[in-house]
Amino acid sequence: MSNAPCPYTFLTPRKRAFSDEEFVPTGAWTSECTEAYNRLQQKNLLLHPYKGWQFEGDFNFLRDLWRIESLRLFNTNETDLTPLYEKQELKKLEFLRVRITRKRPGFDLARFPNLMAFAGNWMPGIFNLEKASGLEHLEVWSLTGVKRWDLTAMRNLATLDVHGARTVESM
Image 1 (cartoon, helix red, strand yellow):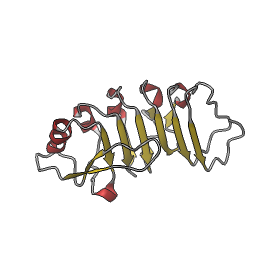
Image 2 (cartoon, rainbow, N blue to C red):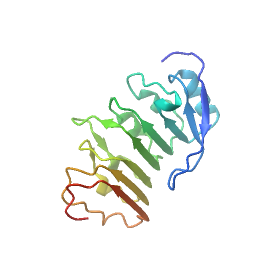
Image 3 (cartoon, one colour):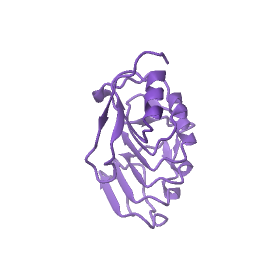
Image 4 (cartoon, rainbow, N blue to C red):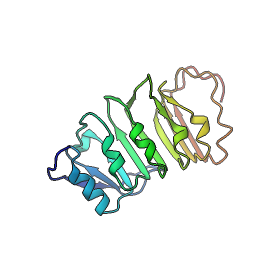
């Protein structure tokens, strides 16, 4: 990670569960981005190449951010997001075309006890959705490889949107 200036902007998404202003880097993530995010006491982050962000191999920089309550991520590279496990305050997570590493480590939703909203393409590398019992909003695309989907643990679930559930026999 370089010390180059961090170009960034702010964006306010228009989605039910994601509607708070987000910090949006418009170039490669640098130590200056970390400094700006922390100095501005941001809590919401959008990492998206269409907005100019450039993925540079890993997500270790997430460990240095003071707080992440909401993360929306677009990354088509195979992704290891285990550095995010240290962010227990995470409440909202959206995967926009993210490819989770299918082998270990995968992505364990049980690691986020405060998770209230999850949106993303379903894939075999994501597991323990049933342990995300605090979910209020769940939006899933391409739900395949699942025959039975048990959501009974999600007593607070207010909205459920499923787009393309080809193999699901029961919910």
